[in-house]
Length: 545
Image (cartoon, rainbow, N blue to C red; front, side):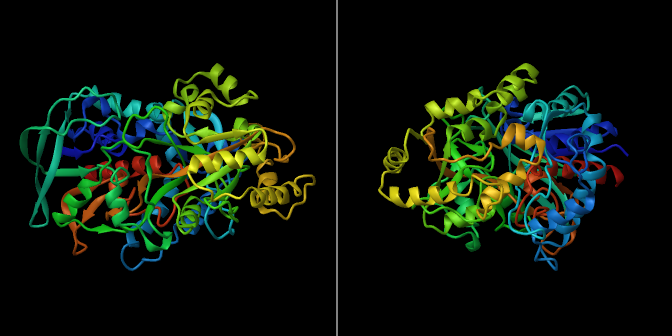
C-alpha cells in the first residue's frame, strides 16, 4: 500500500530512507530547518570514510578480514554493559550492522553508483589487547568524491523524483503522539537564507505550520554543535568536561530534536555516550562557529599532555580516540601537543573533511598522485602549517619548546624534560627490535603496503638536525553515540518500552541505530555507514508494514 512518509532532517540517513521509499512507490515529504543549499547535512563535509568488511579493496591489498574478526573488534570496542536495558537493541543492531558491512554494504553502494578511492586506511588501531578496542586490520574506505560524492546519488534521486517534496526552512518544534501513535508535527517557518552551505543561517520566524502525519522518520542528527548539552551529558568516566572545545560540525547540529522527542514520550538511551576527537586544530578559514578540523594522523608523532608528559599506550596517534580523550581530560587541561619532524608531517598528516581533500573530492587522479605520493605535504596541510594558529616550527628543540610555551601563554613545558623523553625514544630507532611500544607499532604498521608507501614515515630520530614541528591539539566536538531507542526496523520505542505506531528514527539521532550501535566507542568509517544502514532499515520496515 502506498504511504506518504514525512522525514524530518535532510542528512544522509533521511536521504537514504527517502530514496528507498521512493523506489518502492511511496510519497516522501522531507523537512529541514536549513536552506535548500544545505541538503546532505553533515555528510557533505565528511571525508567519506566507510567501514567495510572483506571488501574487494581489502582483498586487492591482501588484507584478510571476516565477519567474525570484525564482530570481535566491534564488541571489544563497544563494551556493551547495559544489556538488560539501554543496550538490548544496540547489540542486536551491532550484529546486524556487521553483517551488512560484510555481505551487503559494498554491493548496495555500487548499485547507487558510489565508488571508492584506491586508498585503504587503518583507523582506530587499538593498542591494548586482541579482545579490546580497535580494528585488527585496515577497514577505512574513502568514498570517491568524499562526502559530496557519497550524498550526490541520493540527493539527485530524490530531487528528480515526482513523488518527493522538499520543504527547507521548516523547523519542527513539537511532535504529537496520542494513543501511542504519531499524529502531527508543528513548527516554525524560517525566513529564506542564501548563506553558503554550512554557515549559520537566520532563525527569524516568518510563519508557523502544523501538519498531520501518518508515518514519520526523525533523522535530525546529534548534539555536536550544542556545547551546553555536551557538557550536561558529559560522563564522569572521561574526566572533567573541557572548558574549551572547537567544533567539527555546523551550528545546525543542535540536538534539539532529541529533547522534543523525549518531551513527546520517546525513549532516549545512552545519553552519556559520545565521540569527540582529540587532534583538532582551529580552522584558518572558518565556515561555522568555532570551526575546527581534525588531523587524521599517521602513527609516528610523539604525543605530550599540556605539561609535557608523553602519553603511554594506547594513547598514540590514530589508536584509541576515547582513551586518549579520557587521558587528556584527566590532566585538567583541554589541549595537548604533537611533536614531530617535517618528514612525518609530509607523509602522515591528512586532514578530515571534503574541503580539505580537493584531490579526492574532485576525483582528480593526477592530483592524487601529485599530492599523496610526492615528498611534500598536501596543499591543505601546508596551508594550515603557514596560516593556522596552532603550528610551531623550529630548527632545534629548545626554540621549539619556547615557541610552544609562547603559543600556550604559560611556562608549563620544560625543555630538559621533553628533550630527555625524545632522546629515550630516539635510542630505540636504530634497530628493528624496540621496547618502545610506539616504535613497535610503527614497524608493524609498515608491514601493510598502504601504510608503508602512503601513511607511515620510516622510523627516524627526531634530534638529528631535522626541522621540528609542534602542533597544539584541541578537543573537537563531533558525534552523539546514544539517542532514540529503536528496534531493527528503526521503529521508535516509548518510555514504557512499547513501539510507537508510525514513528521511526535513523542516523545519529538514533545513536546510528538502536539508540547506540557503537556502545562506548567507534571503529571509524561507521558513522556514515550507520546513517546508511539505519535509513535503509527504516525504509524497509515501513515498506513491510
